[in-house]
Image 1 (cartoon, helix red, strand yellow):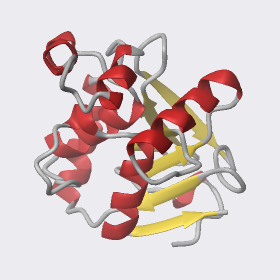
Image 2: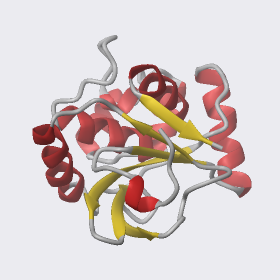
Image 3: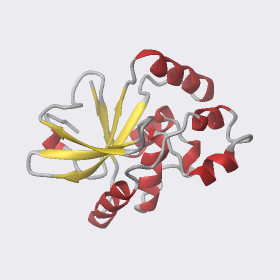
Length: 176
């Protein structure tokens, strides 16, 4: 898959990037403890394709948000994209479910739950409705009928690195 600009993306494509600063360092450390290291610490999903732009939905500390990308925004060095095989119906469903999850709260407790493999906080995370970025993307895909993980894990048991490795194994991936 070669991506020259955002208009090459399709609904359902999964984007990956790096969070900078101390937060990014903590996410990287947490991922290294849980799974083999991965430099990507943030993920998002293409929700809509417009004539000259795409919108992505991503979990953020202020709540999940929709963001419009133009030109070469989030294309190139430091960014990765994956395209999973999906039907047109699944791609349409991605749009519906991604947009429905706008505003879903973000919780740093999810990182603690991941670090303890959910043993301590699983009930809290499941009932809270909070999601970090990788949890949100996996939840959108699951609701759209795209099963990324086949090991029985719940969406709250997904790190950005685990998602990157799994979608890379299932579909086409591009990063620079």
